[in-house]
Length: 498
Image 1 (tube, rainbow, N blue to C red):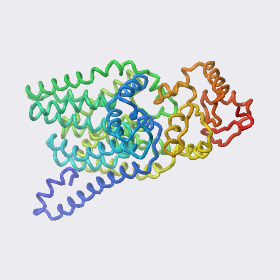
Image 2 (image 1 turned 60 degrees about the vertical axis):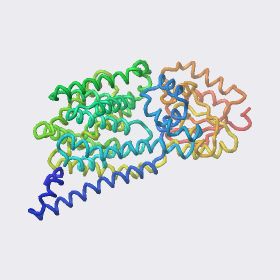
Image 3 (image 1 turned 90 degrees about the vertical axis):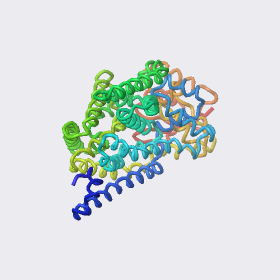
Image 4 (image 1 turned 45 degrees about the vertical axis):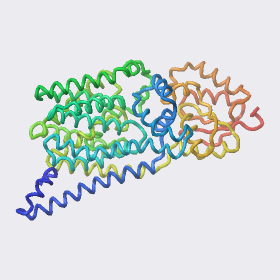
């Protein structure tokens, strides 16, 4: 019996007693997956340390609205998630504190709302039995779990894209002003939450194909209205610096395009697995996705298959043009995962079970790693006692903003000096290749010549900023307090401090 026929089978169980047992077992399995995914989201939210991007979200959200908009002009991304986080955090003041977890709760709620919404979408597609299997699969996708517990925009953008899809399906059935308004707001909100939502939102245009004239007009008008709502942000989006996304070109992220199919089929990122396992996952993902898409075209729901292929085609075209859309760590796949879950739920049960089994195994593998302390957290534990003794800190490169926030949360607030000063100008990203070597050396010399120069220096390895500081520190005979393959912490001895 197909997993997607559980509800229908229950109504026929009095004629087929064996089916009752099987359908009951399937339903128990599906609800167990939903509960497991929910529990995993809450657990990861609690156990995983904040990381640099979340700290950037918090830092920006605690600013005033004009400051948030001004900061995004020299960074990347749209404003809606930051503005919502600002509203949530405003009552608690600008200082870091326990209430900062609300930025993760926003993502958690958005992710959990996918589950009942998938049931509604399945009903709109005319296949209500797809709802619970799709929700169960989405619940245990590791990427959906990870970004449900992260204070970034991905879970909210995914939810709004799914809401827009549901409203568009409803509008096909019943043209109504309130439904059209809901589609407009959800579509505009998704794009203003994360730019990746542009692709599923643009693909909604395909739903006008085959619709009744009144529904087609309503869909077109809603799409136009959404474009009008997002238009005021377009000039800022077009002028945000390309350097803000230059980190994508790093060699450590070169596997992101090759992993996209794995991200989609299993909701997992294979970067931490051995090469043989990764290759097998890529082959398996390609085969499973090809089948479930073909099955949707042949057996239905065809409209879902057409929508997913259109959205994926738009993403591929955008990647060819920009070369910067396939983000590492599975980020690109997040807004597509609920639609992929529906595709798998519509296919024969083997395919949903295969994807679910791999997803569950990947989730079990990932969660223990989420509890591990990050580099920033370990660094803060080491530096905090020195700060409490009155020492000041200079952090080279990307570690400055994170260290400043973590020290404040650890009860050891300190004025952390960012080096170079460009880090303070746009703390969401740092590209030192744009800073001339002479400028780095001059800034390091001026910092160390200042009567208020710091006494502790955090120097991440492999960075020009660290080398510039180290070369100027050498005559002062700094004492190394900490050294590992990632960074050094050095101190200017008291005899040379002033």
